[in-house]
Amino acid sequence: MRFFSRQRHAVRSLKLNMITEKKRQILIFLIFAAAVLAAPYFLKGNYLLNVFVFVGINTMLAIGLNLLLGYAGQISLGHAAFFGMGAYISGIITARFPVDPFLVMILAATIAGALAFVIGSPILKLKGHYLAMATMGFGIIMYIIFNETVDWTGGPSGLSGIPNLHIGSLIFDNDLNNYYLVWLSTLAVMLLSINLSQSRIGRALRAINDSEVAARVMGVNARILKVRIFTVSAVISAVAGSLYAHIMTFIAPASFGFNFSVELLTMVVVGGLGSIYGSFLGAAILTMLPELLRVFQDLDIIIYGLMLILMTMFMPGGLISGIEAAAGFIAARMKGTKDSDAQA
Image 1 (tube, rainbow, N blue to C red):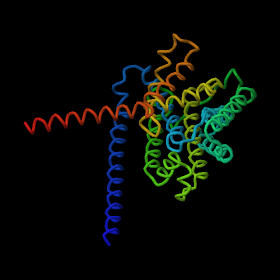
Image 2: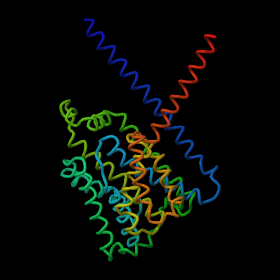
Image 3: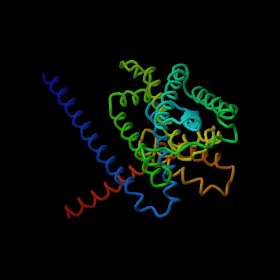
Image 4: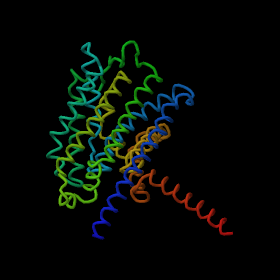
């Protein structure tokens, strides 16, 4: 009887901890959302607003990749392909036909998700560098398609004439409107991802990341879960691509190549694997970094590679884990000082 009593107490404690963590996550999200929505009133000039529009798009992409890499432990070097699919499907259809861009966004996300589901089943059977090579190959194939189907995509010259998004008379054709459009979408993706990470599926994904064999032994269907999270990640990337196309009103294959896949991977690693807010941090840093790297011209990919190596060696948890560790250290020191004063 004592054994079962201890078991019930342990389960009750676990449930209380989960409820407390969920409340903490909701509070952090509400504070972050309030800060993001209030930011335009403190950002001076359209240039900064425009930069943060792209921070929002890159945050969506980084979150999508982080769900796959940070939670499920499955690397992808071809995620720019799904970003490009969303952009080109939305761009081609809305530039040629008078259809509602939001309906086309849904279509683009559906097609990207369906393709991810189809190719994910065989690709995700691979592991390690074999998986990385397979996803890189997919990204290169899609880049070639974007380049060579000139009649549809415009080829290397790009595709122009893409209309801005609109809801009735509200047209998203300026930086302020685009800012709120992108960040409301990004906050929705963040909330979805936080709920997913705190759910039974999120715990199963982390179990796969820790040890796929152990997860299978515990009854987790690892194959299906990996394909599903790959699909969700592709859908998020396609939505970001559609937003990008309608904000820019012009797209070219160079924006969806292998270099951008590496940049996305760098965002996730720098921000912190398995951290939704780390995705934002990594996206913000690497979106603003190119402005500082212009003097290095074509050496940016080398710098991203060095950042990946250094972060993996010295801060494998990313910047977000470093910030959390620093905050914990400061809190412990402050508590220790208070205890010393009380004893004195």
